Image: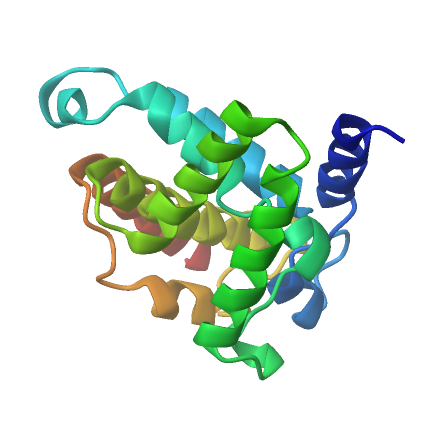
Length: 189
């Protein structure tokens, strides 16, 4: 098998790799890692290019969203509850990204690795924005599970909201969080 086909098969595993946090909480039919990455890429696309958004490169954010969890096709979706230190998780993912990057050719491979490193370092406005999207997508998904499994108002997945409280930085995402919290409060009543 060629390296490109090998790469495509490996990243294809993201379509069936379930997000661990939802599996641990007993969610019926939990989303896959690729589901999560796809919605983050679409959220990145929503940047308007006006006001605060103008400072952020939308296309770059889309790329970051598509690459940020790519290593999970091999290492899996490691959560803080898995007993793996942040350093070990980072080491495994870095090693995997170096391997995956080696399968796609020098230019694309360098870009994949650079994007992943940028996201991990959290030093650019784009990386910080995509981190906000990562967290927001998670709580939006938690809300959707609470509604679809008819557990709204029970606090079933409250820990995901608690984990992200006061961690959002970008004004657009803060607004989305505020809207989601209002919607969630309405469902409680």
